[in-house]
Each structure stands twice: as C-alpha cells, then as structure tokens.
Image (cartoon, rainbow, N blue to C red):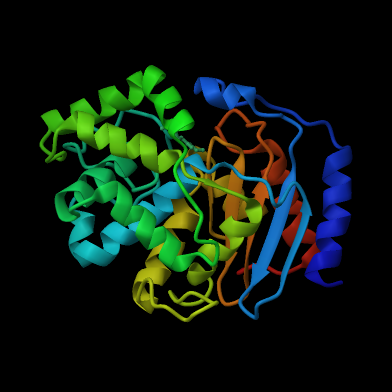
Length: 304
Ligand code: DON
C-alpha cells in the first residue's frame, strides 16, 4: 500500500472515532476554532505530495514554530547555543516552571516554553530586526512565500500570558535572559502566532528530512550534523511529557502545537503534517496523535 492509500484508510478510520479533548481555550482566540477541523498533508523528498481533509487551510502552529526559531538561533550561534539551553527531555508540561531554579535558569530543552523564550532572547541579541528577519528565514525555506504571523492570535495570547511572563522574568532573575523581558515576550508571542496549512507546513519542514537542505531549491538551512541534532531533539523532547509516548507509538521525530497541529519527520523520506484542534491532557492534538500512530503502524515504516 502506498502512503496516499494509507492516508485515505487511516483518515476514514480516525474520522469515525470519537473526537476527544479540548481546544486550547486558555488563548481566547484559539477557543473560537472549529473543533472538527481535520487535515493531513504528506510531502516527500522526491517531490510528491498528497493531502486529505482540511489540509489547505491555515491554522495557528504555536509551538511548532519553536523549531524554526531554534534553527535560526542554532545557525547563528553554532554549538554555543547549548550553553543557554539544554538538550534533555524535561518530563514536565510545556509551560512548567519547576526545574528552572535548580537548573540555574537553563531550560532543559528548546521546546518547552522556557527554552523557546531563551531562544527568542538569543535571536533578539543577534538580529537587527528579529521579527522580520525570522520571517525572512522561514520564507526562504518555504515554497509558499506568504507565510506570516497573526496579530490577532499574538495579541490574544498577550492578554493572558501570565505563565510565560512569569517564566521570562524568573529566567531573567537567574541571568539567562539578556534583553528586556517585555521585548522577549512580545517576540515569543509573535513566533507562536505563525499560521500555516498542513500543506505548507509539511513542505516547509522538508529540510529536516533532506539533511538540512530545502527540497525545492536545495538551499542549505542547516548542516547535516545540525539536522541530526534537531531531529534528535524532536524525538526526545518534541511532545513534552508525552515525548516517550509519541516515539513509542509513532516512531518518528515530531513537534506539536496547542493550535492542534503536529509535524512528523521521516528522515530521508517525507514529512507529514496533521491538524485537529482538540488537545489531550498533555496539550497535544488527540486525533493528530491517533492518526500518526495508525499511519506508521499501517504503512509499517518508521525509523525503528
Ligand atoms: O506559550 C504558549 O503557551 C503557547 N503559545 C504555545 C504552547 C504550545 O503550543 C505547546 N504545545 N503543544
């Protein structure tokens, strides 16, 4: 069975299952999303692509964007970035504060909010126009050049961002935020507000399945070694305290966001994006996890 047939079969199966979970209603604007949206898109290194359901509709990618800001910071700082943020699974929720005091303000990894806030701080220190420069970087690797932030989402999150405000100020007090916390938070919320469709997301992330180079124009985004490390982090930390579960059930590196999106990467083969807004208790898309588990199980391919 080829990937497209597997997508058809699994989409039908998962669509019939009960859609369990809750919207990320702590961000007011995300509470207004249609909970029944369900889209899938696969893009392969050989240029093939296939979508099902709401795959062409933009949604808020939220924490998936943390991978993109990390890649730019890694490109700029090289291995020195790991002095500011760790590479260990946290085993805690995405917005946890608990380990920071013992760890002297060095977040366990770049995908928990604490880590992504430090990455935003690094970008502010090194870029003249952080918001514009990050967007230009993202557009350089995307075949669709219209990808953009969503001001409605970022300002909505700013109104309730108390946890992130606490995280940023706490890390500042421990010396690992170098810029004004308000500026860092504004940029962090902007990063999380990026909107893409499953189709654009899968194509954008192809550089991670293609040894660091874009597939459509062979532009080097990361070196091979850096690409290996980002994929390793995605496998071990991409789903917070559900990372082990995702690796166990799906067997691919990936990243989730509270907008209900998941991107998964099969190195050297393909990327697959899923969007379904209802989240499980760990803040990951309920149907997205179910879909990808069934997809790699039925297609009988995974990195393991
Ligand atoms: O900072 C937050 O809470 C959100 N902007 C992003 C969290 C997120 O996407 C976690 N992922 N599953």
